[in-house]
Image 1 (tube, rainbow, N blue to C red):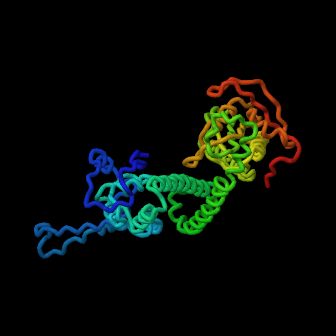
Image 2 (cartoon, rainbow, N blue to C red; image 1 turned 90 degrees about the vertical axis):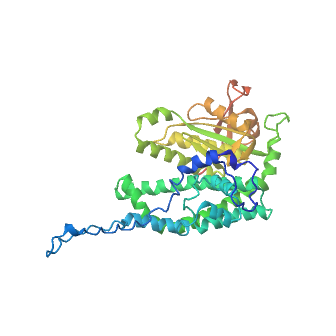
Image 3 (cartoon, rainbow, N blue to C red; image 1 turned 135 degrees about the vertical axis):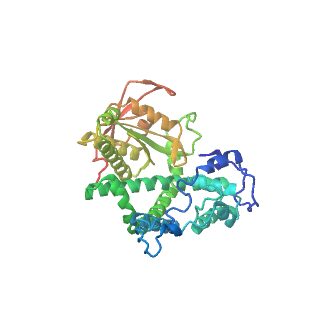
Length: 423
């Protein structure tokens, strides 16, 4: 993402300038190929070419001219193109009629300020003459700018929140499209290419319910996030103080969490032997199973990276239950390989939807030390769990770990009770 997005040199609340001097060295080059996604009006009708008049010497006198063969009108669009154009108008709120300077001026912004927000949303560069926007684009720009003007957000916060929306919705849309295409391929026996074309005609029936579910999920997740990151944060910090001396590397960090990794064994060698379809099914099965177990255990799936998943939980016990359930699930799975799992209780920094800090790094290092089908924790996490009958803790030989020196891994095993129960 361009560094312009985070600099504070342009005030989002500033009025529009007549025509500010842009970064002409980079902007002209960047805008020259802009419009691949938002170029001149997509699907515009091409007017039929006018029929040429015949010259007098081309027609025999006293004889009627031969009738010209009738060609199909050149401006007629195919049904697929018409469907795509109608879908775009519905999604964008109308036909593209506005250029970027018009939208920025309508929101009372300089163009550079508007571009900050568009880049945060993930939009490509556009030229001054590209007719790429609708009135809804202008209204959306005004919405975020008004939050800054009213003092509800700083410019930095507005850009950060806008970037979160852009990145998360981009990933969500790609995921949804691929899920719909895969479903059509499997259920209707069509090729991938045919399914992608058919998606254009199927989507209009799904827009409203998907949009409704998005708003519903966002409200629920926002409420859960407030409870997790604000209301209950102090309780976790108090728990994290037990057994600490105060000089730990993560001491200044603001949140206490159980941080875990699960890593599929032999994923690289397996992926080399699989075709594209089989590999996609394996990855999807892995992610689905992880997401289900983590959510049932009250944790949060932070991210997946290929064959590895990063998750957090609010208490050491919840993290331990999730970790054991993940290890058991992959050991019992008839398709997926076993997993190495590790979990560490400590303090973290939560930013940009991800988590950072020594606790995260230590959990990653322990994962590499774990045997397939086992769960490792560090000695401090083991101390937090040792009075809980649901867990058995088996010390392992000390290991020298890069960045941490000598650590004392402890293997976590199930004790009394049924463990995490999945429906």
